Amino acid sequence: MEKCLALFFLIIGPIIHAQKPSVPAIDEFVNSIYDSISYIPSISIGVVQNGKIVHQQAYGYRDISNKSLAETSTQYYIASTTKSFTALAATILEEKGMLDFQKPLAAYFPKINFPDSIQADKITIPDLLGHTSGIDNCADMTFKLAYSGSYTYDELFAILTETCSRGDYGAYRYSNFGYNLLNLIFIKELGKTWKQVVQEEILNPFGMDKTFSSYTELLESREHIATPYRALGINGKDFFQIPDNIKRDDTMHAAGGLYSSVDDILKWLLLQVNNGEINGKIAIPSKLLSKTRELRGEIEPDRFGLGKYNMSYGLGWNIAKFKDKMLYHHGGAFTGYSTLISFMPENKAGVVVMVNDNQIGNGLSSLITQFIYDLMDQNIEQDNPDWKNAYAVSVSNIKVESKEYGLDRMYQDYSNRMKRTWDFSVPHKVITGAYICQDGNRPMIRIFEIEGKLGVIQGNMNASVEPYIYPNTIRVDMFGIGDMLKLEVDGNRVIGFTYKDNYFAKL
Image (cartoon, rainbow, N blue to C red; front, side, top):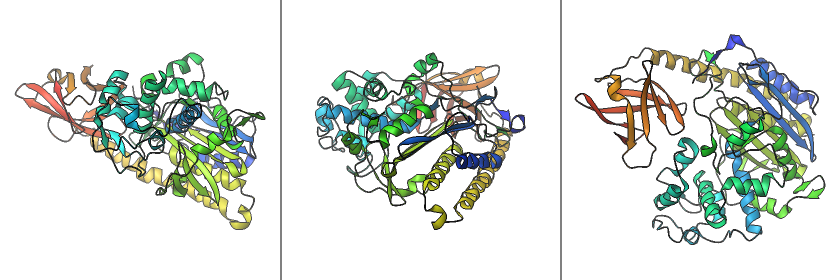
């Protein structure tokens, strides 16, 4: 159910918790962000410098309607930053002799008749983890695991035959599929899912008892969870909309399936920058950490954030060079959440930023991270005396852009959509029912009616539904972007519909 709160209801302030270590300059910068951009639910930050925690603070509200303050123990969904955990777990298993990084995909699945279009006799686990396999799954395995939750493991193994080429072998192409395929290797070789592997090889040994791969266990732990928000809302006027779709156990997958807190991720950063030591004792051989950071060929830098410094991708980490120092980082974003984890081993520094919003959270987490690394630079005042003003300008630009390209356009689009009316040639009761995807790749979709309003559900996903611009069409919004569902009507009955290039037949 959608839930919106008007901005005037609550102006979020930069409330912090001073009993934990705090760097005043970071507090001041976050204060300036909140002064300029008030529609940010919460920001949680952890900083390591010289191998020690120097900043551990949370700002704003984890739950706006109840005015519940965020804390550094607050849980956020960390999405694709999960990849670094899965990759290190696999590296540990290889060191133990339980996995073989030289063994090709065809040897791991000898009974699967992989198509000739992929090089199953060459693709290895490092290719899967480093996004250089050149493959994907044309039966929508990634969609099932990340969004709908409609699958069994037997079905996932069966659709391996529909593994397909999505690029040249050896060329970098970011994809969740490699990590989800690794999960099937875990199950086949070890009889364990990625969740069990990460728990046993990473979370338990490293004392990360507040990081969860199970939403059910997270709820049972009674840890506070940051409510996911679309901070800009959906209509340009009402803010802090709670998305319809949030993660559940069956959609928490190997490429993006952990909830965690700043407190726990600081343990992860300390492990990374202190060469595998925890409290002066070796928790993991440093050579295994180094293996996840090895250069695997060049990649094109992104245009934004830390990605513009990228030079390669290791195993679960983007590899960049920032001010002539190696920087390893990974971001994670899903509806309602944004996380950025990064570290620089040379000066034993690391930063984690979590925001319970993904509309402007991605840009803010990157901006805050870069500010903190600049703040650590002892030569910054000499090299760029005006550096803080440059960040002030960046904050102002985010405010302007979020209004001009976000709120204003959102309001205009929403206003236009609200003028539409339903244009069906048949009654609602004829439209409602269950529809099966013709090629079997996508889960069943149900159209229902409650109190005169239509709704759409697919697996775990609930969609916002509105009239569209053509007769016998529905605007369906499952991911924050509306898509057209076009009914096929024959006389006084509905035969099926087309949605996202798939045909669904009515049962």
